[in-house]
Length: 123
Image 1: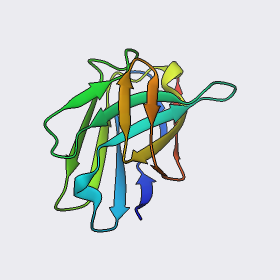
Image 2 (image 1 turned 90 degrees about the vertical axis):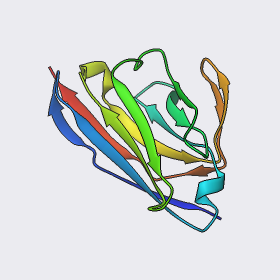
Image 3 (image 1 turned 60 degrees about the horizontal axis):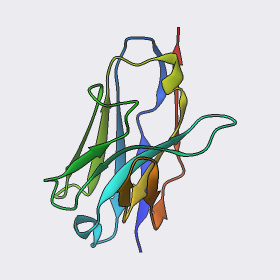
Image 4 (image 1 turned 180 degrees about the horizontal axis):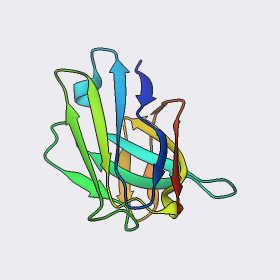
């Protein structure tokens, strides 16, 4: 079992940056692919970024490529999402996902979810 706790959300102006963190409990963290998803009001949950268990493969949703960077520190049981050049359309609740399977495009599945952290980008 893995429990995930996100932090780092908040209010930022367009063009600004934020770094989200996801702290995981459980000794099996390092065995799982991890990722970030987001959900804006009235929209479906959207894949943002994923990282393989060793950190040697990363995947990004088209809307964030070149602006967001995912990373992980297995020694700290933590995965990060560095967000830059933020836009108002990035406003959403961001969720950390554990044991992620990414199939390309918008197709994904995950067995563990955090509670989410709100990111609001003002114009």
